[in-house]
Length: 143
Image (cartoon, rainbow, N blue to C red; front, side, top):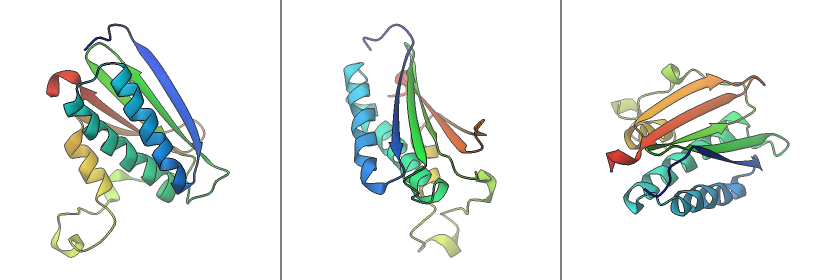
C-alpha cells in the first residue's frame, strides 16, 4: 500500500439505475490510484455496487430527484465506503435470510448477504436527513 495519510473522496449521483456504472468506476479508480491490491478491488467494487443498487432501487425507489452519496475514506490500513440514500430506512434484521429454503429461488435479498461476506465490517445508521447509510470497512491486511 502506497497510501499513508487519511483522505476522503465523495460522489453524489441521482437515483437512476444507469448511474450505477459511474459509481463503480469512481470506486475502482480511487482504489487503484491508492495502490489497493487488485485482489481486494473486485470485492470492494462488488460490495459498493450492491449497496448503491440497493440505495437507488429500495431506498430512493428510483426517484431521480433523490440522491445517493458514496464516500470513501482511506487510512494506511483500511478503506471505509459509505453509501447513503434519502429513503425511509429499513431494519436490517428484517431482511430475509437468502439461504433459508423458502428464499432460495427469490431473485432479491442477496445483496446484504454478499456484502457481509466480502467486507470485514458492515454497519447501518439513519442519516441526519432521515435516509439510511451503510458503512462498510475492509482492511488491506485481509487480502
